[in-house]
Image 1: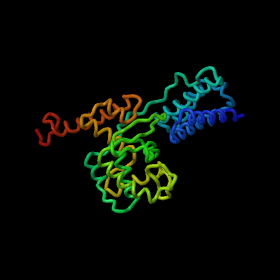
Image 2 (image 1 turned 135 degrees about the vertical axis):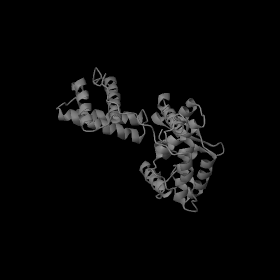
Image 3 (image 1 turned 90 degrees about the vertical axis):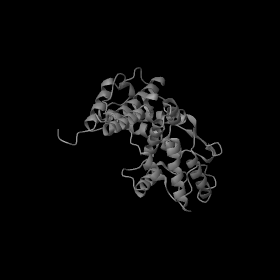
Image 4 (image 1 turned 30 degrees about the vertical axis):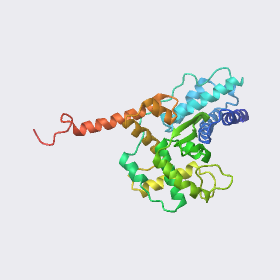
Length: 304
């Protein structure tokens, strides 16, 4: 009875992989979110997509919300369902979008976590010596911070995507969109130290810029684990993860007076509202400085 539901899900995922060229990470999110929805439909004895109605989607979202799924995750779930339903409409399987008009509950907006400039300097002040994996890790961290790459963009980079003479790197972002990004001199130097070590590790037919000790393209999970270890090793007070370096890249550029549109292009954001969150972060810091320094804002330390 449920085979029709799963078969169209698999067709949709193949469509995203082959026609839309979505990243493995994005495909995994779509697969997981649609699995939630299909499991719910099967529990409700729905066996075909034309039977799905608006109340099924609403009830599924409500059930997951009661189980503790947060607003952002529910918004992503609804986005996956809507994309899938548009595909089903295009394929003539349904007439109307059952997710139309349904909104997920919103979480309170949280600002991205970043490193201070001196914390970044502390993290990247490393003498790697001849250890090839340490050279690789420092090059990874420098490239994250220098160019604001996403994790999937960094692990997807090949050696021929780099132009170290011009200080540029070509990356493939969301939706297989390609963009050229500047690479700072510190990152260029770190990559130049890594490339000779890479020759001793990489398999002969491996194009990846960053490889594991086994000689193949490094996985996203391996990068996350190594960065967390480096954060502990360098004495950072909070966990280090790839997106924190990307957030720091954007925040530090805006703090230095960079144009918001330019930062949007560097980050590969489709919508400038996504980039604007970093201006809120900057204003938050300004407010803290004001509260600490302004005579009318400082708290009284002596009784009146």
